[in-house]
Length: 381
Image (cartoon, rainbow, N blue to C red; front, side):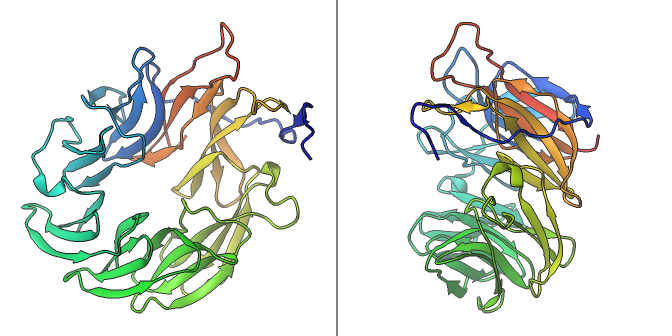
């Protein structure tokens, strides 16, 4: 119960951490970073300096931390970048597509990509989603191979390629033939469908309608194969493929205290074919944001002041936490950053990275810390 005008406890006390503290391989502390991604040995981030409010795209060598380039254009506020073969497509502040060389940041002349909202290159073919249309191009020549109409509406995921099909998620989950673009099936829920993942045999997603669940749809027909009831789902997550025949599902533990931070997340591994449970593990905390990689959970974690008032959270102490998917226990942490607001972590090329911005106090005080930066660690410590 919230008592107006009184302080309340924001969270139960966490057990004191006594494990390893890993120092970053390198830092870039002169920029404020709110988004990070890693691809082919390069760490990219959306960032601004203390002197300039506009956000630009920065690129760093993942191993050395050498700054490779900075975009001359300002970035869109959303997360809207993707790679297609040897090009990086990003949206500028005016929502226009900017196509650049991922290694140098130099502009590329790729007219076929100008209308692209999302895209992926695989098997020598580039698949592009634009407004109301899915198009396949030869990845080298960008000659159009086929195109097909999409159901009008916001596209929330895709194109995703698996098992001879291309999937796009919006008002409907649509499946198209990989070679011809012919529609294979469509599926519509009464609620919303999360981001998806797919393999040769099925599509996997979280579903929220009258209830919340994890579902499997047959890749050939779109018919539902199995459903597993859950306590909570997040539309911005998807189940994760594990090994050759297993699927990882994230849920809350049971009981009245399930939503509380100290009860952690439950990660359940199931058989892809049947949904049958293989194993289950609960983490020690519900993390602010996290990603899965190499059998581990990389999380932006934090603690805040014990007392809250109507102004909201107190200043955070933030750190990168790494936990095992086999035990749920923490393996190592990064250094704690007082007043630091961490981005969602990113993994790739054997590295894990996080962006840092300074906490904005409701009533700023002279001398408040202003931490910022891009911090990068090796995933194996």
